[in-house]
Length: 308
Ligand SMILES: [Zn+2]
View 1 (cartoon, rainbow, N blue to C red):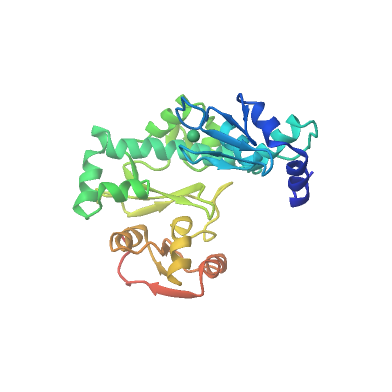
View 2: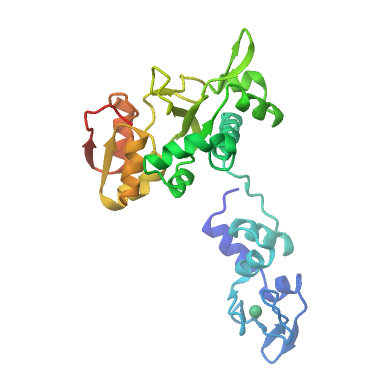
């Protein structure tokens, strides 16, 4: 059954607020109304008044008030649809409504796995001695603690710390491989991103799906490495920072497209949150669709230098 206005009105008309409130607290009749101790503040003299005529309640001290659904929702700290269902039960007109939360994606276990990795890498960067050099490098580039937290920047100093951490947190080898964060070598399981600063990449809903990771020691041939395509990540299907930039872009009426994560962070520092990055790839059809979904105006900001 769908929770339509018709259903809601029917339940409200059938319910007597006095009986429903009495279900939870004591009420006594006083004149044309009923009064009781207010459950929404530390009440010692009855401050809550319930009007049978108007079918509303009001506390004269804390101001809490509303109709029968408001009361149940506030009293039980439940959502409006849940409160409607609860009132329907109390008055003996039970309704079957679907209160299940949004359907969980079949990829949720991988998002969770990546979230664990992000938590661990941010700890390694910001709170562990092992992260000192990487942190010093970021500071030198002008990146602040606030930016590190906002962009969930992390670090992995060694080649199987993430594997050990994920394993200790209940993740299976095969899932770590599928999610693109570990691989099986002759010597055993190893991390894909190590001795690098890691920047998580999210999908348009804000689920973590991949990483771009920067070498800061100058010892690697490739300054950045990115996740390979896998069950949750398709190259060119996403824009870095899209989920954070979307609202700001709509508000500003334009979106700035730049090349790399460091550019996005620099814009953020300058007060611009309507910024996304293509992460080195040429703009794909899918990325153009994503840009169109944000707003009409796109400002390109490619500096032509080596990114980051
Ligand atoms: Zn009150």
